[in-house]
Length: 149
Image 1: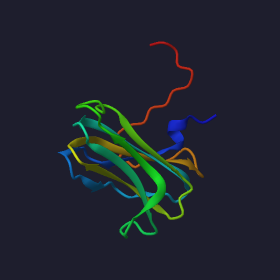
Image 2: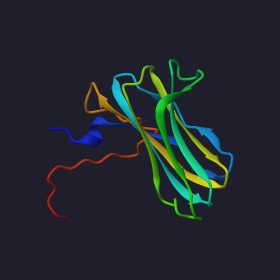
Image 3: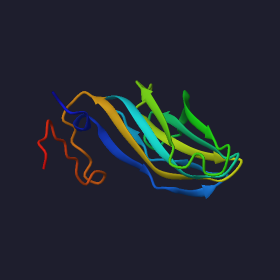
């Protein structure tokens, strides 16, 4: 049986984004060829009351084209009191997108929100194990039923 980490294509999507009330930033394109789905994950690092944090998945038929938001592929959180969203995650899972390339967009509104690094991975690949992108993954270690060290 294959371990899950070996079947995923891991990718660094975007660097952390400083606190602002008007962030609108796209991550890197994720090539979905030979994969069924993708997950995008970003942490909220700092939040100010009334701030709105949003993670949206987009798609396009070319890596450098104009991306369109996907219906329903949005995770949103609103800060009720200062710092209540700190360390919380926004996660969007897209299964069987209609076009080859996906990317995520982080957006803040109303009051300051700071985002951590955006990570993205493609899953349910048709070939395994997945050859990781050397520029993206320094090392992936998988163990099965390990003995204590």
